[in-house]
Image (spheres, rainbow, N blue to C red):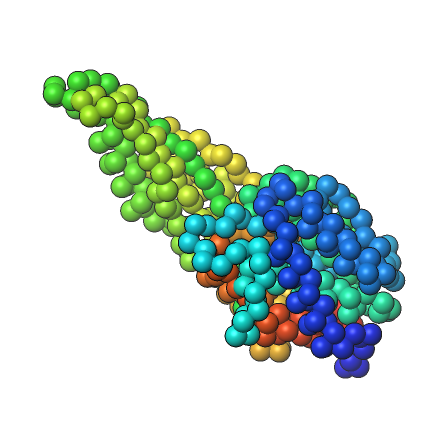
Length: 364
C-alpha cells in the first residue's frame, strides 16, 4: 500500500498537539460555558489555513477536497470539562509538564483526544482521491449529555457513515458501549408516629423493593458488555426521628447493554418493582459496531484490541455507526491532578493515522 505523505512531520504534529492542549487547559470550559475554548480551537485551524464552521460552541470542518458524493468519516470529541474536585493539589488550569506527563484539567478527558484528532485532520486535510471525506467536529456539553453539543450539530454534518469518538481508551477500540438510564422511584406508605405500630412503613417497603431489583438478573447477557448493571445512587426519606414518612424516594443508575433498548430495560425493571418509577430520559442508549467493520479490522491489523466500555459518551446520541477510541486512560478521568503522558498523545496521533490510511486509501 502506498503511504500517504503529510506536509507535517511527526515532530511537528506532536509539538502542535502539546501546544494546543496547554492553551486549552488554561481556559476554563465547564459544560455550557465553552465559548472561550471554542475560539481557541478556531484560532488553531485558522493558523493552519483551514476554514471552520461554528454552531453554538461546536467547531467543525471538512477536508480540502470534500466530495458531496462520498460518505464521510467523522472525528469527534469534546472540549468541555467537569469542574475540578477539591482533592486537587495542583492548579487545574495551569498546564505543568513533568516526568513525561502533562497535568491539567481535561488533559486526559478528552483534551488528548481533541489535540490528537486535530493533528490527524491536518495530516489528511490536503490529500486528494480519498475514499471517504474526513470531517472533524469538536463539540460542547458532552460531560452533561447536553442538547447543544453533537446532538444539535449532527444534522448539519455531511453524510456521516462512521463516527470515531475520542475518549481515553488507551488507543484500543471500544466496539460497544453501555447506555445510561437514570430512574427516579417512589414508594408510598402510611405516615405515623414512630412510637406506634406501622405495617406500611414506606422506608421498609422501599428497602425491600430496592434489594429485590439489585439482586435481579436480566436474562440476556451481552458478549462485549456483560450484564445490565443497576446501582442505587441515592435515597431519601424522613425529616424527623419520631415521624414515619409517607414516602421514600430513590435513584437508580442503570447501565444498559446492547441487548436491550433503554425503554425495554425500564419496562423490565418496572415489572420487578412495586415502587412508582420515572425515567429521566431514554435518549442515552447503548451502541455497538460490528467486529468485521473495516475500521475495526484495520485496527486489529496493527495490533489494537477491542473491548466493551462500561462508561457512556457522546456515542449514545450519535445516530450512526460509531467506535470509541482515544489516547489516555479512563481511570484518570475526573480525578484530582489529572494528566496525560506526552507519549500517549504521540502514539494516539500515529495510531489514528495508521488506521485511517488503510480505510481512507483502500476504501474498505
